[in-house]
Length: 240
Image (tube, rainbow, N blue to C red; front, side, top):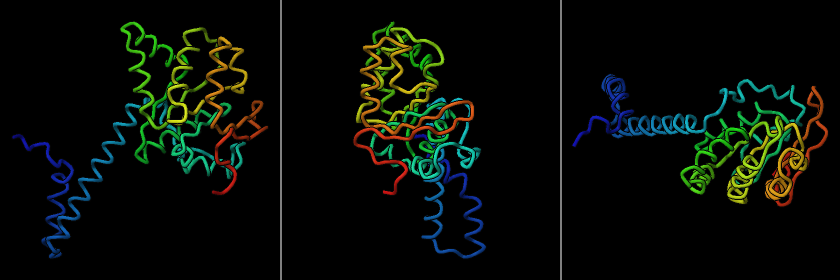
């Protein structure tokens, strides 16, 4: 049996840890504890790197570059979003613009051990379109909704046809009450029927907004105009 790849992070840390242990006369149990911790830490970091790569986030934006004071979203709402507790409750987020916020939330979710996926409506449509060719759409949708957080960015930049509406509906329907979805758009979700076929848009939006936090902004300055919640969600701007 090849053990060359067994416990790679422990093996990497061992020379330095053992040298320190000898010089400081550590108890053997302490040496074992530290080496095991190094292995666990390394595996966790590798998992996060893998999840980030699979998520295909667009630009690497995180909360390190997020300027909370410059956002039109109330500070308590921002802070509540950052707890990610709403993801644990399978609640959704619909926000005007704010792609930076969406990506920062996705990165934070990955940092905390969750899986995420990032699409534009165009890339989602293309992804499911390819699956249609070999009749694996259900499998593709199931894989997407194994993620804890699904982001669909920039809806409404261009009119969308039947294929886009079907792709959007399929994912929203499969995620309904099971996974959290972030949608960013220059439109209120109730206006999605102006850019895609009405029946599918209405069905998708009904499911999206049933357990959703909605943060609307207006104008080039992204001034906050409204922050409301759907049914069955904990308000983001209130404690608890």
